[in-house]
Length: 463
Length: 92
Image (cartoon, rainbow over all chains, first blue to last red):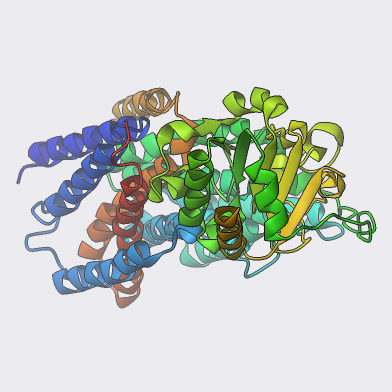
């Protein structure tokens, strides 16, 4: 196959990726968009086997190793993607992103070893960039995975003098980068990789719960840029196009997500450098709360005219989406006006709740976005908050300085009654106390969301 | 390829990337991120190229590791995105 045809097929795959991203931006075309992307990626991969690079011949060298490695990767990736539960998708995406960054860094290292003294300065600079950013993306993603999987604390990890350690590590990374470019050689490059891995860890540790999805999106954009840089070194138009597309769209997406959460992108990114140890002791938690039984909740619902259901991560954990739909249908059959108030970032990821409720076939028109539902809480008799906390926490509006201050929330406190279905008094993902729990018009129903909802459903049926 | 050609491709791709996702409902943020994540799995192509011209065991070992990681990224990424979007079917 000639170089021209090879590059044209690469261009075709690049166009597939553009159409994929465009398709993924609209609900109607999203699934088709993803398939177009998969087709583009498959074509791009297949065509490599039919083109001999300079100084090489077909079939490819090490063909057995290559095919074997692809088989291993597919055997790991596909079952992981198939079996993962809806609640764990965010961390899986983080992990997939991390291994992509790791792959880019490895490709850069191998190419560097291969080129040896023949590498041009530009190639070395791009190699250094790929190794740094790819390693940061890899280790950073592993930390976000551990945070979301709750293998470690979800709160910001800040230690005294931490920002000096981080700034020092960054300075060391840049220093070694200059060393690699000027001195060349394998040892400096491996030192660079190790320091970059360390920096990735330090960069993500101070990021608190609610900001984790934004960081995943950012690391995703980073990985895209490393792929583009590899494209330069490997002389591949396709990698340049695909990597740049992901880098650019990922940056915009990161900004959109930060806006949806009312977070400052700058604050999230440079939190590592500015974070100070927080006073996490908080207020004493001995204040009285009003907890109720499933019967109390059922009675409250039975005499309501309008009920708004506010789902959160607890709903996802308990897999209670079908039960909540059962409750909603029962209320509707009793003539109660029911709507779901969906916070854009309820759960662990934007859109998490929509996906979950769609699985239970909740009618689309019952799902109201934040801007639609907020003005209606004044006419709402009961707001049922199921396993959500931070997204209804009034602290976001009235406590300047708290980590979620400025995030738009669902104003459930305007409803006549608020019911919280919670597992415990533990604060939400952001680790902030919620004043609303102590409000006299709030009733708490403790327990697993699914078990609680099932009891409420049978209590309501009996009325 | 000339440096100017590469810079041109890069610059145009940046603008295309900005444009295609400028208006996205928050419902689709997660699938879109996941889809973009799968797309950068094409680093697999790069991993195969370096495996092809690996001459030492060290190079080949690292290249094989890169292929495994890149395949997980690409194949897993598209499958998990499809699973997320499966939930949207039958919608208006």
